[in-house]
Image 1 (cartoon, rainbow, N blue to C red):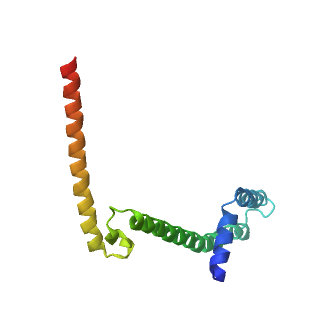
Image 2: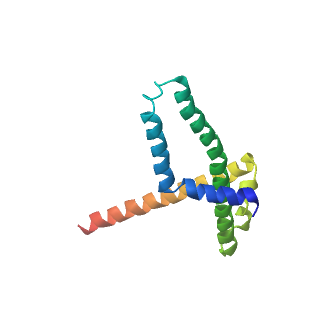
Image 3: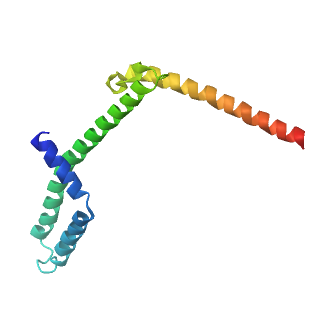
Amino acid sequence: MNLFSRFARAASSWFAHPIAFALAILFVLGWALLGPVFHFSDTWQLVINTSTTILTFLMVFLVQNAQNRDARAMQLKLDELLRAATDARNEMIDLEDLTEEQLQVYCKEFHEMQQRYQKALEARRAGSEEDKGARQ
């Protein structure tokens, strides 16, 4: 694992911890309490604006790294399930690499499949309600 990945994983774990949140709250409270001391000056405002902007900027990269890692892991798990399932279509493995047009073909197929299942379910429900009415 490269240096950035190790750092991103450790930082993501640390920043997601309740203690990190509590420290952020304390920082903001400390800054707010110091407002009257510094007469709510431009420099006083600049401290919070600059620090939160820098932190937000850096966190974007950490969050994106964590999301990419999680998405890759999820895709690999799903690919393994597809590979292991005997009735699954193996062409579904690595769908995330298809073009938008190719994905739309699968979306249309599954939408049509869902509509057929919905009609069959409604027919079953109607049939079971008729059976109940006939028994009463």
